[in-house]
Image (cartoon, helix red, strand yellow):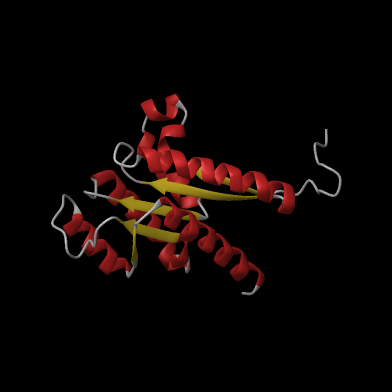
Length: 171
């Protein structure tokens, strides 16, 4: 059965975004970002046949969570078109490990698909895990961006998507 609307083809492009952060520290931002991506996807799905999907660990099936959830997250990160990292008062072990998985894309020329946002300058803080974060940023030659507001995350996400599609059309 074809569920397409008049003027719409059944060829849908899906753009997957994986969000890495402390769930407890960024629960509100994660919830609000989900709402933003949902609304953006609703618009792009109708206008451009583009489905935007935000993947968050709290959305995973319980069976996956109970049996080796990190392996599934790592696979989701590898398959994502964009991986967003949010760091606040600390850089947790799992989020740092997910940064290693995302960094595998650098060898594939996909460095622009990793977005790192920090509430404080990781080079000027001694918070938990920030020494490791600094080493990883340097080793992978990744830039971090100030996490000042949800609007900034939304704007950077939109810019990263635009860049992704512009690059695909103009290699």
